[in-house]
Length: 106
Length: 259
Image (tube, rainbow over all chains, first blue to last red; front, side, top):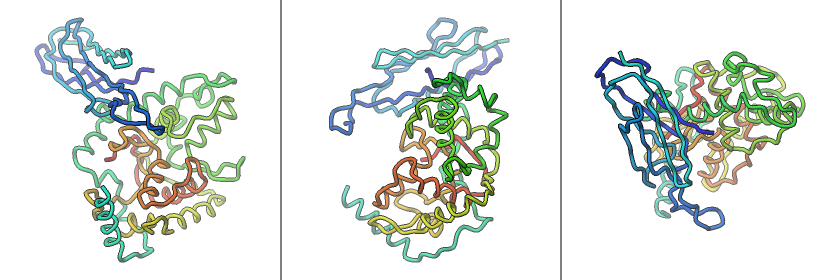
């Protein structure tokens, strides 16, 4: 069950700078901790976050073990055309989670 | 690390020199929210940056999901939680006639699962149980805590008060030693709050996840080096009964964020 919260303004003016917020539930296990039986807990972090605006990549980030659990990323975009903003998180386990939101530009 | 602990123990002993049984005056009641930094307050205040909302979101999905041999979802009986669950969390823990004991919201969810859905109970502190509890409690956000007035709860609430005021552990501290008598002062770098359960299940930055009041109580017990009660123990529910009475009138914040 994907648990992601994304916040994109529904409406924006042409050329307006809008703030985008994206948060996802993820343990971000560092790989440096050991479990109750002393064995290492394998690393499981989100490695890469990307955001595309009508299919074109407009923002991406590499994440590392020091990033906290449930990473929250906020950034700004220039609203150019109406369309879809897609978000993708891919982690060590090879799992990819996605979310998307629509924006209307007038 | 050892030196640090010794220092903490000395600090605790120092601030608890004077211990009285007086509680907190009504006019002085303050949620833990007021003791936080503006940055952490902002994190809680904005639903789009409050990580606890991830659990509320999951709870909303679980609410609709059919479970167990009865193949029925929470919404199958309770319909739309936004209407039917509004205000419910504000009066919990309630008296459970079947067991003759008070029951908290997480306990009620699990008993509902067993009886109505004929499903396995959810493990304490599992994401699913926290998510459902958070979702149901979230429906009462902004409403004042109004504990049930059921007379049958009285002996359990008294037991909760007794536990709250009893010194425990190697540090010989009671809950009241810090949270009634010394709130607002500092323990190490942290401000001691009044310990009102206004925002549970809440996202604790130290935990990097959502946790229940029981987890928090167990934490404090380990902190004073006492043997903590097990998850689901009757004593923890009794304590919660006392804490909700103590916090009467404060507003529910679930999901809260705490350092």
